[in-house]
Length: 356
Image 1 (tube, one colour):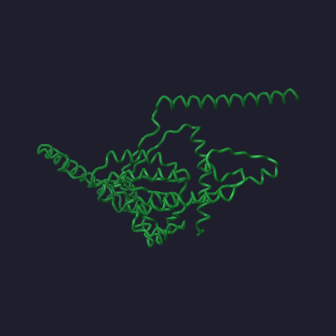
Image 2: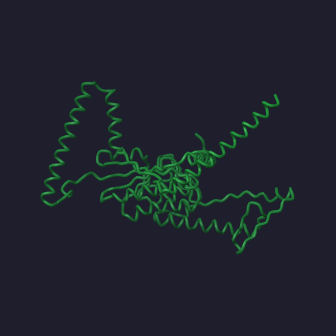
Image 3: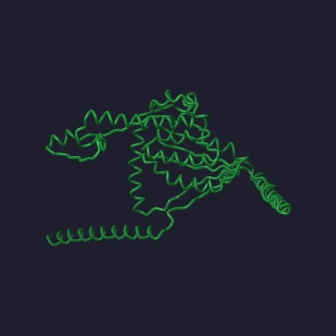
């Protein structure tokens, strides 16, 4: 029995070593592939008009007479064929006259993007690529819809995300932002740049404020006779600290920095929406959609779905997404990080919103 126990222990150790080696080798191979310059991701585009048409066809197929449905489909195919012939004939005629595509006006295009924000505004990289792709193809009459959801997060991260939206403004492309659930703090920093903001009736809007929470373990360390030393050069290189003893002077300086950040935030929002009574709304409060409309934080009550559906007949609508390639190690790490962040966000939302 002792031999079996020793053999089992040896086998477990051997398996542990082999698994560790495989993990290391996989990481090395993964880094090697990245260094070879393989593409990190790609753009995917979906024609929303076709998607809604397919859904409507599925419903009609089941709610109307089968023969009627077949006749409708046949008539639709015939009309599409005739339209295609007419468009080609008009294009050939325009080419002969030297007018090019000007003689064949097409429907305006609406490009829809999505931003699902976390504390680090991690979706910014995808948003950057999507905006770059769309702006390279937009023409006069086109527009962009961003479906935005974010409870806010790090100032510098959301500042960069907002800067990506500023690129759309600088290009002169109309930008509508739809908030179906929440655009608070950093989320509203992004939303305020829109030419028009839509909000669902109970979407959470606002929270134009700044906060910082810092745990301090100084008394715990002192209780266990543990010294903590922090060396700095510069009077305000470090103000508040997690492990050292915080002073009133440090707290005062930290509060001043927060106030400065808040003033910058207020100025940014005021510049984007000059009609706002910024001192009234920049108190860190949040408003539901209807109240936000009264305060001037949004321009219209509605959802992204309604906005899109109202334009199906007159616009060509495309959903644009940038998808990044990720190794399994990244997927595993991101899954754990995403789970933790979602838990934190849920706690934050529950602490700020009543339950129904």
